[in-house]
Image (cartoon, rainbow, N blue to C red; front, side, top):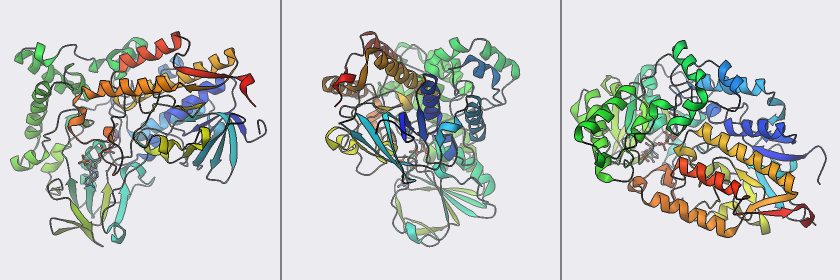
Length: 535
Ligand code: N01
């Protein structure tokens, strides 16, 4: 079938920032686009992650679309770091402003996408039992959207309430008077723990690995500060790899700096707050000695924030700073000074099992009414694999990527023509400002489809050699970093059986340059199938 009500030019999976922008861009080109979204509302990550304290760790002025200067100018953010409800309001405003909702089908999960090689069209099956066809499929499924609850023994027996931070109920549960346990001290745990502690009778934090966190220094956004950014938006957005000018990378290595200079850089970043430590020195993630200086600095600051010295030591990470995604917080460490908060170290003694009434660690039961899983996500590939995607010869994508994801530029993979990933593995994605990367990918895809129209191409697919070279190049870049020194979701370590591969591409400016070069050389590394080639 090449026409009819269930046939589209493009099917987009997911209605978060990426899917909505893909819809807007491709529909502006006159294409018939349909977006499927599993949730009963748009927003992706910002629809699902409603846990108390959820906010973005990129500043709101820079965690926003840049594609339309009028939109940039009219939207007013209220705080330095936007809360989840505010970001969701922004996404809903964008959807209404560009009349996007009419092409988004909610509460519909894409279950499979199968290439029909004879016609070159993708056959898509959705959870409402319907079948669709499209020339292109775009996976806008998000990098951190497949929530992970570890397979704890006895979990099914637990009688209390259970919530995952990434699937938080719309009506937030009433925790007053309850004994609440939180498992996990990544970004979601570190953001939610201070808020949960205010609500619960007692909060028990089950910590396997302490994480580095730096104060966010969140504050209301003064209208003058906002106006100043808006007056110079394009230039400011381009600075600091898109995280905003306060995070402009320091161009020096620790080894090129005197101890006084190192201290001054770190003091300045501490005073500003936020993610600036990641770009404090260029050798931070490649030179262990340099990293240690930064890590020591942050550890000293953690000790200053916790009254009980023993507890402070338990909260101090001994990993490389930035090996796991660092966190930013509001009163995280101070929360452990509250009398109703306790920490259980499950690094040395892992959680043994759940009982009907609590969690057992080292032979002792911790009685709980509520358990909050802040246990993260099957990152980058989890949501892609939830769709049964079959390309040439019926090859299953999950099987092709069994030993780790293989893409060319993070955008496409051999054997799956006309299937695109937005911020896919092999692109900077989670190491970058996601909105910048989303816009870059969507615009690249839109330009590519335009170029295909102009050259009369039916399909695009990477060449095997280009994909192999890209995977090798991306691995080589990651090999020189300290990312391998700890266990992290970047490497898939948090999911049993997942291959240990560093999934994002290290180097945002280099990536931009590579993408531009590929296009300048007539889509070097891609093969186009002519329209006449179709049977
Ligand atoms: O998940 P995580 P997250 N027993 O995987 C622990 C983005 N994000 O949802 O470190 C005990 O980081 C696990 O322990 P360990 C951001 O990119 C952004 O917090 O594996 N503990 C870890 O402490 C972030 O990095 C924002 O030893 C277990 C925690 O659970 C990413 O999402 C906000 C365990 C999981 O941490 C993911 O963050 C939120 C077990 N069996 C998220 N299994 C902002 O913008 C896992 N853990 C601010």
